[in-house]
Length: 395
Image 1 (cartoon, rainbow, N blue to C red):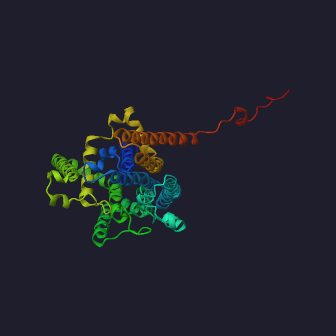
Image 2 (cartoon, rainbow, N blue to C red):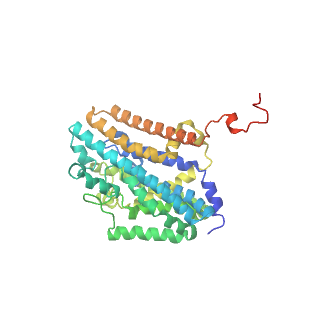
Image 3 (cartoon, rainbow, N blue to C red):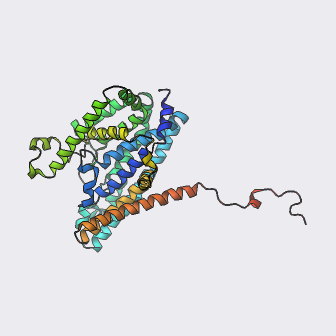
């Protein structure tokens, strides 16, 4: 274990960039989860090979490593593992409540609105004929209702995080090598988890764990390697290569939406398909790392923009990401329902998207305020907290 790791973790513990990026990921996930939403054309996935899910998983691994890595240094493996499992239980409890209410809500709306296609569109077909069986498989994370896949993935990743963290604290490079090996093995051997009633997970945890572990590696073990690279003259070359790759990804992604234009050859589009999100395509990982590299260079930890009032709502959503993510699941369904029942206009798409983000932000501020109230001492009068002095109440 490197002696300076504790100091590095302490410095990363107050990194406002993490809150900003988690907030952006939460907003983009909501927009992406609303089918046929015109505003979702502005999110990350439309401009390259990676999207909001990549950002959320990577930052999730980074923040978890900072929080529990510091705890492991101070209090040991057993205590940190129990705290990780406590957080895991909170995530699972949130998922169970979300799953039960979500599928019931979809079924109810589909019956009342006489729109049975909603049941199939949101992957809750089994709830009609096999309600109990669907519920049981949902509790086992085997059901795959639309928009719950990110939370399911995060629960699985956190379940194995104590082992990953233990390896990162001692042999970070070896642990990362094992993660890379699992990633390529799962792609070559087609490993994935099965789902109910058929099919597989939309986000293969055997592949997506790579981004989560990469986040932990940069937080715990990779900082010194990155710092060594920055001392070399090759830094300018790396930045240029990153910009060129991002430009290439932008052209291929945008041109792929207009194949009739013939901007990009067919063989090039076939080599970089946009539907390889299940197994986390290698070119997507490279694209995200290029983005992260340039972001850390352009936005330092002491950036003045973190004080801007315009960024405070995003950062607040990043601080309360779990509540915001859960709210976004319901809001995405409500937004989709409004779009399919209302007039097909760009103004409605903008209004629905703005309303959803505003509600998510309001929830984040409320949750933050509620936590502050929990930490405030209850009001007590001085007479109740102090012993009466001699003769004070004497007649």
